Image (tube, rainbow, N blue to C red; front, side, top):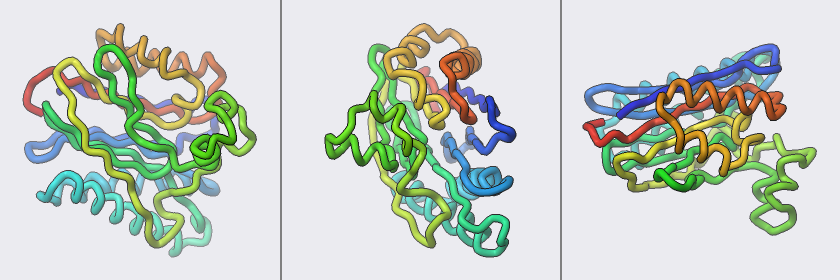
Length: 240
């Protein structure tokens, strides 16, 4: 398996995004987290979530679904406990999207509106479901996807790591094959670039790190005002 990741502060004063590429003898996983909160609190939330997730996955030899669910619970507890212990961090939280994989299967999980996509060489399919105000309006048929991109409450998420003592993560077991890719990103990317254009970048990808950089550059060109983080995993058919 080949992996690459990049994060860009963009027009923000600080970068509250974090990403993880975990490659050990026992677990192969990737993750992206987008922080929120007061001064530096979002940065602390995302860093804490990713670090806790990594440690939990390395220590868990159970099924991937159970391991991810447990890791998300531990991440939530870690961020929530820290937020409760320091007034300057009260109310902080973050999104979290992650996947464990081998050469034939992957299991994804998410809380919030950071996303995971599966690219099969031709088309791009969003695997995760956003936990956001506009996503709920779309599910009810009240607004369209295009209207969601400019909705005044498009940045309001309805589920986050750390804002409550407990949180439920969505789990998605999937299959993939040689030549496929996984794309994980924060909303600084997917909030501005269409799925069709993202698929074109992946379809023409020769170097994963360069593709991450190109996607970030395109998001900035299209006016993204948020931190932007991209992680790509390419299935080359080898042992993960």
